[in-house]
Length: 106
Image 1 (cartoon, one colour):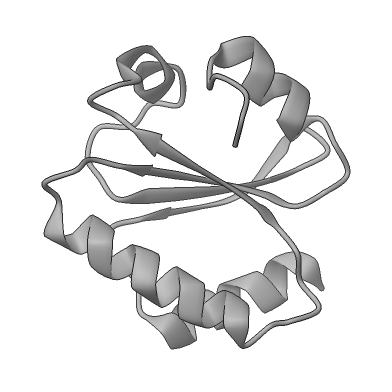
Image 2: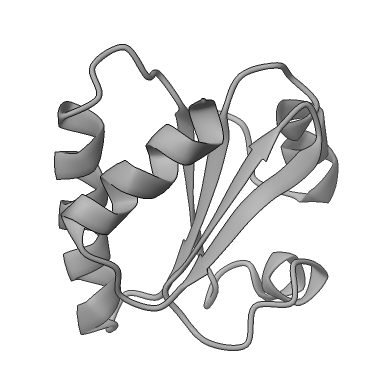
């Protein structure tokens, strides 16, 4: 994403009617890397779904991690129209992500 990720730009994006996924991680986090792979595979299995994925490195964006009460990584938070729809903490498998995305999008 070309915009700097800060509280006001993220809030502006979250208020859209598009599904937005905030993915909180850190560079040295093995489970974070695996979750990225699982999420990519899940989204490939749902081609009609076009969410906006914002990856937030908590080591570079500590204030955002604090704002969203991120105490450990990885964390996925799903938003639509400014409302948090779902939060997934920890490493989650591809099939479970597909199931959750289907529930969220109806």
